[in-house]
Length: 193
Image (cartoon, rainbow, N blue to C red; front, side):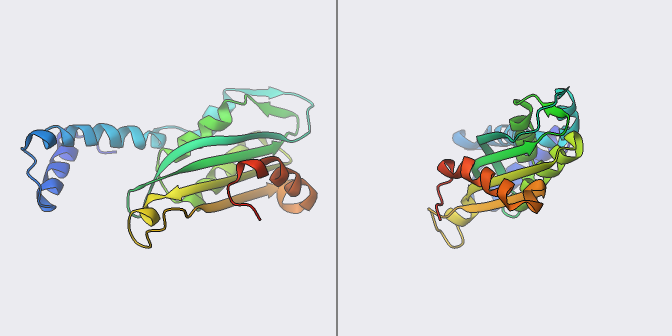
């Protein structure tokens, strides 16, 4: 993000003029300042390292069964139109001598969501960060999201959802493991097969 506060606010003020608005009218006078604060909040994930977040709560345990955290709500911004997309993320991993504090998984999801994103990359980034940091037997991530760029403009399909997945390690190589994960999150998915 640009560190020059006045520059971003001036850009927003000029944008308001370009779309035919009067940035000096009462309702818009503080919009450049509010927009800047909102954008800094919505993109705060750039200043954080997901591996550092995970490493703060790694514990050595002999547990080697699936750990699943599901229904992680998130909000992000599409990098193509800078419009929101939002939904739920489901994450599982099979530990290999290391577990992570459960709250760190939603924190990693949030960290990647707070960047300009495409859902496909976000799904892969979450899985890769967990795989690289914990070095488990496998990691699975499924994201289901609604995209305002498809709902408000373009095709204008209000009920459409995009579902993406990333399967690493044993989730990719062992169908039984992958199916166990999918069964665990099935009630959470709105798209039923």
